[in-house]
Image (cartoon, rainbow, N blue to C red; front, top):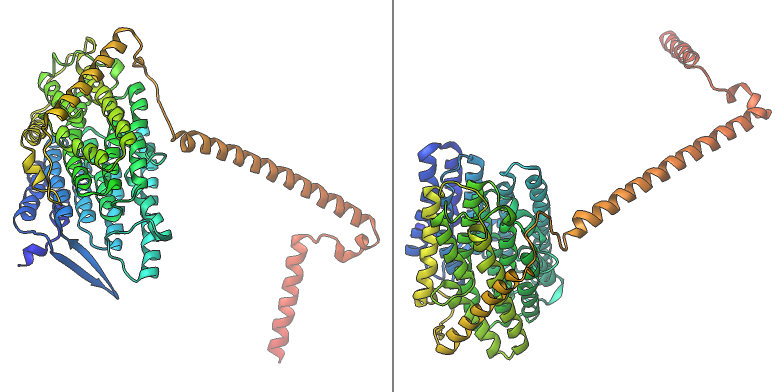
Length: 566
């Protein structure tokens, strides 16, 4: 049937166009219908092995290519889009709503793309649609960070296009499957994926832009861009060993920045990179267990990270600030939001019976199976770090640290409903992991609730909590102060602009000096020539403009008279 071949991005694009002209409740219904109808279509009508292609000249664009890997990402993208749409129903910004639907549709288009050119098209549409969720805040900082975000995201697309064209020239194929690091094309595409996946030194677009988005915009952003990159890496570079080391670095360095960060949404942005590191490690290992763990962790992470961003967005919406130094005591005004935030914190901390526990443990087990004992210890340290900054710091300073005196209302009903759905799924996956495991691309022969694993994880959580309490009690924990912490982005936010400014001033000085010197030399040469006999010759003198016009008129008149006589 033709319905089987309908690309999953189509319902979202159609809904975005309808939302552009609809208003009020009709607009809300259109937005809710996109993930609901699209999800039902994907679950009921689409099965592995479907290919939908569209010929353009001598090329064939594969708009949809389904297998178990793409389908599981498609399922979670629809679930997350549904939750995020419910969360954003209170907003009245049509441009933000339309952008969010285009954004979700573009992520689905990238996940189901069967060739590199189709992937490039949706890769760039991801960037173009998502930047409006940052600009929608309409602050100067949001506009600047959104502009930086767009430049970096578009550059990722250009690298992808260059790699795709080189690959086509070398192999005659644009198929999006295993790519590997062999050749220039593989390196360019790897770098393009790495930018969107927030590799070390390429990550600052995430921590710069996500905290400046609107409360609902940040929820959408936390779901789609980086997970699309994880999918792309899992398809194009499984078993690429360097990814193990890149992922290990990604799990560790954000911890130190998150600990000193005052903006709680920026803390979540750093912890997002930390969790991406686990997924990148799993892709680098490349075994069935590791890749299943990566996909499962991406599935779980989308839910609990969205839940944490939703809870912080609710604080920002009600209290008007998300600075840890200005918050505290909000559990009195927002007890439901606080409880739901704790569910997200338990999930990201990998507490038993929560979703993070049943997915992250697969990657750690695969790391040990492949003999990477030292890197396993690195990931263990990173697990303790995420408990510290995302599992404890975010809810503690947001709701409990002190009484800031802020008294406000509970989050709006639609926000609470969205957070409750995400929280329920986090608990359901943690309690019944087999339902998630059944969706994974490869057969799963793993059970997380072994006594040894549960006890070791509880010990890790206990000591991480004790470390936080001990540091806080002794006053050794970094204080929450108003400050802007920047890391590698110092290069393009400070060093490069400063260098460009000095270079421009130096060029201006050289230009002025050169101009003055040439003018002085020209004047001196003219004076010297006038003093010579040649300079006194009449043709050497400057003619007045009026005289020149007169003689031109005389010559023209003589020519016309001669022509008339002839």
